[in-house]
Image (cartoon, rainbow over the protein chains, first blue to last red):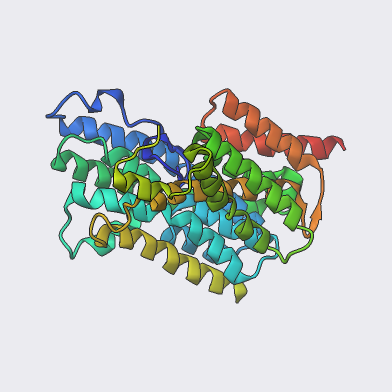
Length: 271
Length: 101
């Protein structure tokens, strides 16, 4: 789940981590052979699909049953949201705040879908099924393809490979964690923060992102002792609008009072 | 039961978000402010989750072996290690520190 942002940067779990650029040769060949598209798609699908193992281990270690763990990978299928949910439940969060955190992380997929829908031009009847595969990795592979045929092949092969592997490795990871017994003794409670860090790192491109991350950490740790589990993380999300607002004010300079959207409409671009 | 409620809500919410993108006309979600918020929200959430799951224990802030594990994961990230290696480094170092303590 390169959940995060520009699709090509993501690499890891579905919906979270980036799988790296789909391949440098993509843009300069208008008639890219199908085999090349399939190769790109398989590379991303296999690499990221294997990280379902980490989710299976984390979920079972968080106390979810085998069935619950597998249902998440089968039906949620967007990595960061899955990790966030089991993490919040393990921390004792109530089901609503836990689900809200997972949902907020999943919202970015709506923006991927927006861009993919024009490119793929799927028939209306197919869209409800294709939607399940709209995640960081499929977007990263599909967007750079030169033709609609290549885009459709890329989307389908990445989605299918990743879906099958992610679910298989989730099952294996959950079974393995159950066999281990006390997962904390094996350090498996550190898997989940390591996953989040790996998802976060590629997104810290500019000072806006870094300041947001810093403020969110501060909020989370300050609020943790005083608010019920799950709530501090949700409130930390406020770091995003706060930083956007402050950056907007700073960039507008002293005396500036108009919103940036308004300014753009008037054609007065900020320098 | 609580877990199933959370799973059900997450399944529905995440699926609807994906479907919404494919169904709404282009332009509805394309306002710059909306897009920037969508890009920045995961940053805040992931940072908060990382901190909470490294330093939180119930409602207490603690400094334990997980912090060492997270440091190892960060180092692996700096060295551009693959995703599973990053996670593995965090797990192995955490387990190692606990075994030594």
